[in-house]
Length: 267
Image 1 (cartoon, rainbow, N blue to C red):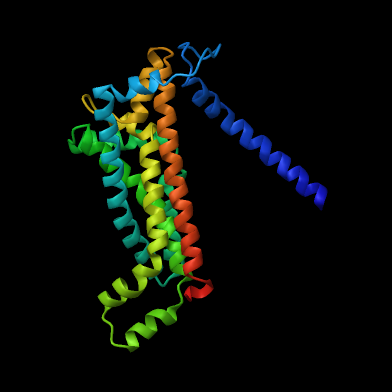
Image 2 (cartoon, rainbow, N blue to C red):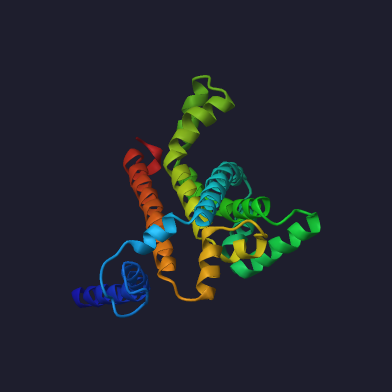
């Protein structure tokens, strides 16, 4: 058994090394004064200064953050409502069907989703740009929030709601005073996950963005096609670090939720 565990650890180390070595390589050469992805000469922050002094890029960063925050906020609200709706469905077959529909946007290839949104916006007469990107990000973020919130709902003890109703609480008081506080860690976790997905998305955004509007992922792709520049490395490094902060925030909130509520929803 110990030997199997040792081989399991080695396997995990190899997998993580393969996954993260290209990112570490990219980050390492973002500090190269030589301006190339080889022959590291000396440490410099020139490429980061170039990124931070690029007005057009700063506007794109602002666009990306605004879209991510708005889409995550709206998707969190819709996702919580959707999770509650699925939770209170009594027929198991209907609940399974709703969950299957919810998961379609998660398991479907991004290229298909992006092309579908492009056709939808074209038919509906919606101009490609901020609105189309925001709506598409909301759409693919909602299922993520549902999957984050629904398991926490399943953990909630029905006695919490019964006790609140026995004390004379209205439906709104039960929702705002019992259900939502219990779901708060998973709601925040869903928000951070939606925010991360929005910041990182490229395939869907590439299809639905228009002239005069861009996001960081699309901008990085466009710059990479023009040739190797270490400003791309610096920009990618900043985006990766920001995403890691969001993931850490999600992890902290998940751990906080595990400490606040035990099995069966008891504090």
